[in-house]
Length: 380
Image (cartoon, rainbow, N blue to C red; front, side, top):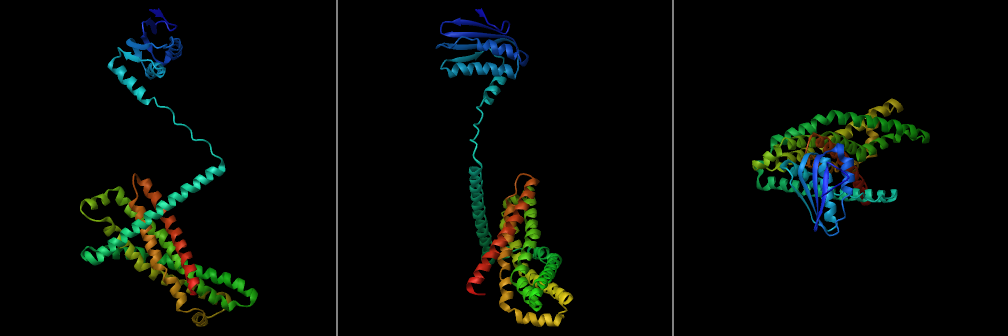
């Protein structure tokens, strides 16, 4: 048996077909440098096996266990057998944990050029948007199916009280903010319109400007945006909190459909109230324009109303209000879907609420643009 360079820590005996290494002393981090040099001095496998005898160890820590494991793994990689014998039970546990943790580091992905990264990010965004769109369409279909089931198969399960509670929360309580914003928008349009039309001596046409802008576009669009930020976020937060508290799971356990209980009343309430809020917003917007026209041009209210009747027809009002049910369904479905997807922690509620508002407003604007193109195409 020939002592190695690490005298007192290991001895090496070269036998027929095998190299036997007897470990002794303290194989701890303080001796790591000496142990590393001693293990590097081991003879080459040359077709022989390796036996590491841990029976003489006084102590071993993670560094020592890793050196033992690394040595055995190096011989095995060379095609030779390697065995660890004589270890105490606690040493075997440590060696097993070290062997389990010995995984190759994941390869770094190749560094891409800025253009390639931009293309990749764009592709991921498109794929995510397509996935969200499919989810939204599927959930819309599920909601319509639940609504038809309640209407024709199980009308007794319809939750009238919950629907009226949502009508009050999403409609009646939203009137002050919707009315104020619409009134101020009417004031702004009239003020800016007067300033521009004065250059052409056509100040009287400010009535046409206010009426068409508010009735066709701004009244319903601003109302839908306010409701998306107010009620859409509320739907997500309410349902998301119920999801975290496992109330939604409890409903399913009791045989209740969460779509029937939570989603349908909110969708119906918003479909009922958003056209009413749009009409109220139109009135307040026209009132703001009338006040500003009276203040800046001296157009009395009766003259404003007379000019208004000549400037617009029922089609102008119809174009704005007919969008309301579609906007309502979009806002409610997006808000409820994001709420049902909450999971994990309260952080998820905040994240999903933000996504609900952003997606709701974005889809409302997209729908409004589609309606504008459609009405222009058919000549309305």
